[in-house]
Length: 313
Image 1 (cartoon, helix red, strand yellow):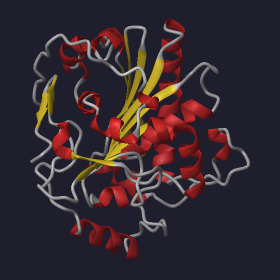
Image 2 (cartoon, rainbow, N blue to C red):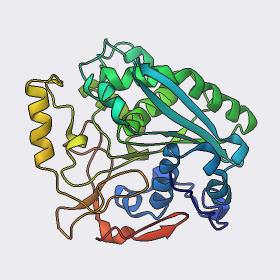
Image 3 (tube, helix red, strand yellow):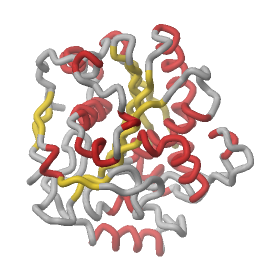
């Protein structure tokens, strides 16, 4: 794995360094165009790195490097999932989720609905049902993630919580965000103030969508490549079998507008010069949660920390 360079001192994750304190009050368009998104992409990328590589870059961004905690757990006999919890001074707590490795295909394809899960999200009478693989993956991480967040809340009682994930990690991020906000696992003062979902698949059914929107819609930014097949899955039939489900997946993949590079953590949305290629906010009609707003990708060209990207390519 490539060594990350040392970043310049910016404190960008602190209020004094420019981190927005009014994220949830911004309009969808303002959120989509905000330069903090580039920093969030970089922060999400850190879940893919070796722990010893992170202090030299995240420290100058404002992270307390001693607070960086990796949580790894097996969700199936052959696959594991990863979360990272850290805090920026006494202002913010960040929870990051890593995306899929090859063994996680088992998790990804276990997309039948779970048993009713409304009680876990503070809605015991709701018929919330989750993508079973993603939900199980969150469950094996939850105990340690909640413990770290709780510990940091005790150290910094007024700190806000921000959740970030890519691909499989984005689905875990949405589940974690609602669980932390409404599930009763944190003190009543806990507040999930921002969520960034990068190339997220669908995480649950319509009841899940409604519960998520009611709690976190105005705090959530979803970004995906145009026609990214992964963000359209699973389909409404919840069929991920090797029969029609796999055929549907391959059909979606065939419609994928190739990008240079495709959406990945650390390589934020880059795509053709095409009017249909947009940065899309929250969850649109092709996904499970949210409303739609878009901004031209070119307007988000930035260079911060260790990732330089021209989003207008």
